[in-house]
Length: 309
Length: 221
Image (cartoon, rainbow over all chains, first blue to last red; front, side):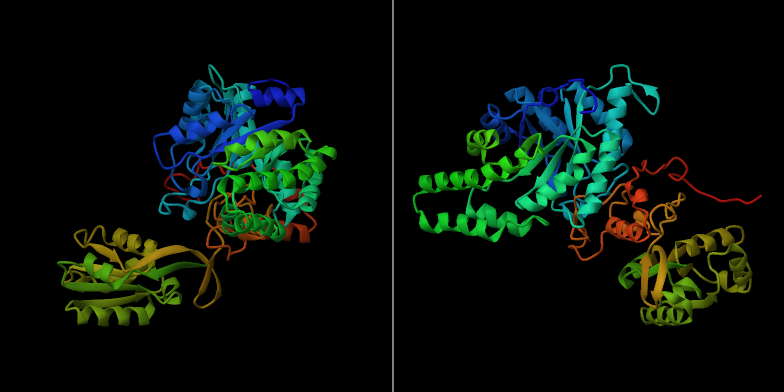
């Protein structure tokens, strides 16, 4: 972190050099957050914070700021509020950043957001007045200078701002240089896209090491063979290696007892991610792990063990 | 440079012309002719289709520059008498064409409604006839000197100033099922070719809309 000011548990952990674990909560198309709150309660003992997504795939869900606030109030978990530049211009974004402070949100993840054309309101205007790098800059301006465009904010926001990175990006160099821009903008932490390819991940993380931004590695432990297959098929740019798919498939075909199946899947995740993360930690490439496996909170106790490696 | 137009569905044109009998067609012989939405051929085709539907075609004007008020004034002056015997004007031109005709007729024929049979798509680069590409948005703050001559406003689906975004997979864009090139990867490749990745690394401020978010004009004095 470029500054040691601490506004949240995530900020505190980074300042102390603690290895960070963040989870992910994905509110759905409902105004009732009870399911998400339940998941937040289940992961709360294990994580520093949980991300709250902002209409992923441009499919409308409850507003991520409102959801972050409600989840924090209901569970005491700290949230990393995800904010995309897809739906609001600078005025709207700045207003929400101030609203976040008023609602007790102290971490924001700046994202571009999936294009409106992909979602369930493809006719809506793709705003993109700013981008994920300049939104980071905006947050830092508001937090560090207490002003916006040189105009003072009476009670300025106090929060940490992070950004995303994709180690799977091809061409990789373009992505690395893009992270340089985010670092210049004042990015305080990076949460990466999900990775399964260790060599590629090492190459990428070594490539962005010079920017000195703490990295939380994005992982997606797979709850079942169906989830693994779906992830491989439907998440563009992320390939689940064939040998992994085969191992998950064998659990499905070889074990009929559901409880034993669950245990086997959990164990496979443990066996895959433990050496993966150990290797990256031994190279000093990580400051934390960001687990994106939504609806799979039972994996967290094992994950805590994984990251201790 | 061509202002690219496409034809509105004929049913939509008919719907617009409801309760109208006598029509004057004003067709553009420049951009719209190139897009096959105007010109002599387009005017002939539209006349025939409208006649089939029972409309009277008062007259047809094929003009070189419908968007140029001076040319339009000269061409419409020649058919002033016919304009007194028509119920509406249907332009086969771009959006500028419709508005140019309205402006020119404002004094002498303010009662005449002016419609368009086309949709205006974009300012286009011509590869060959029938293949036009949007490569300039006319945004008023040209970035091409810094992006290797590739426009991020038009080639990036999000018009980002700091791409590529997370929607890029193997150099392709998430919009359109990964069939089109990611604009920012094109910029990266071009700048790499030019030995100017320093320009790619530059953090760019958001686009300044303060001068372009409203009615624009350029007046040389």
